[in-house]
Image (cartoon, rainbow, N blue to C red; front, side):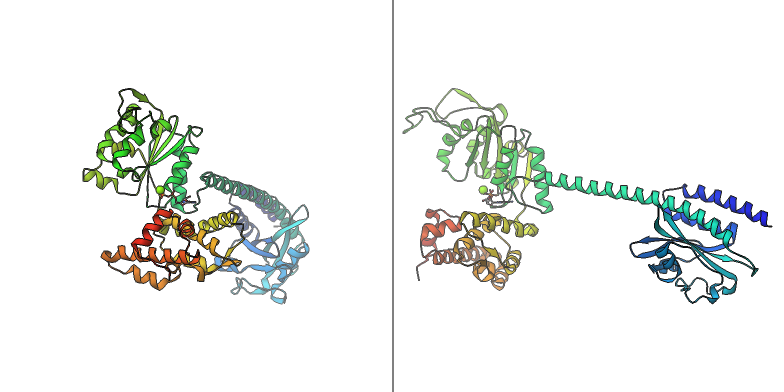
Length: 508
Ligand SMILES: Nc1ncnc2c1ncn2[C@@H]1O[C@H](COP(=O)(O)OP(=O)(O)O)[C@@H](O)[C@H]1O
Ligand SMILES: [Mg+2]
């Protein structure tokens, strides 16, 4: 009988050592160990509890319900498991029925007669560190039994478990370090999609940055689309300065800004005597942009008559100056922008389809500010910092300013936000910018809501109203100095003069 038990012990040990190395899943390995104890050695409800800081929790058990396992959490020093975890010395309760320390927290022994159970509990230690506790219920029938042999065996098993736990902890630590490293790399990758001077944390702007990084080094023609003030010109510049021709010139040209009759000679230059007043040969924008980038803004306003010539420069890289026969060859990268719907222009026949496809090689859409509200706060801070510096001020915004900004729809997009911040910084004398200083259109939600429900037909007049209010506001704050008000609003003095007349604004 005695000898048989000894054989069983050795067999159990052998099984246990095999089990502990069987998989990377520590919990299931340990559950296997507890099963062996139960099946071979009359040690029921074995549990392994591991210590994390001041709490010891059962992580594997056999013969206990999930709920029971979950409730097996002990503070250091609490109950028997907590004591063993605290002091590192085994505890044997020969008869748990008589032991007041026995918490029976897990409630798993309700059905048994306690008299027949001893509770054996040994520490799991590795190099003097108490990692946790191994405990079993030892069933017995004879009262003369001593538990020394059981304890010795459990200590051996605890040593095996300790090594296994230690190994898994190290693997887990390495895995965590690896995951952290992965997160870091991901962050660095994200940071790669940063473009100097362009602010944007929103997903849509991150996509724009990613595209910029992808297409900048290529020589591809890029078509920038988006409402006015969304940053098209800024992106065009970024594309140039991140390209292979960054050292070459960046020439910007707005197709909508110049009368149709002058467009051709502006773009392609003219020879001496090409027309009255052409006293000298003059280079056009394409020649000036040679070995660099030409940025054609408002390309949708390019008249049909000029479109074939643009197409030819793109395809053959050559053209003639106005009034000349000599063919000029250029190497330029073309970037175009439009706030208009080019497809509609193609449909209506005012934009050539072949040119459209040639320009649309890489389309890049800039989202309006109201569709990326998460960028509003950082943009506002960015401009606040910029204008604080320019004006040698140290203004701060109160939180209600940002909340008003978030509520506002920003029809003028980033440009409007930039101008608003400049005006606020220039006009503020105190230390803070608060909601009360905001333009009425941004400040007054009810006004905006009202204008939001106006029917389409009256919308232009609403925008005019808003503009009028802004101009009056700026004039008042700049002491009715038109040039100053214009600067704050991002207008030219000529523009503000025109608007003042058109809206009939008078000093009150
Ligand atoms: N994402 C941005 N980050 C910083 N400034 C921006 C951003 N987008 C636009 N701006 C600023 O807003 C103003 C208008 O941008 P711009 O590129 O001229 O717009 P668009 O050409 O689309 O009308 C510029 O002063 C520009 O510097
Ligand atoms: Mg623009």
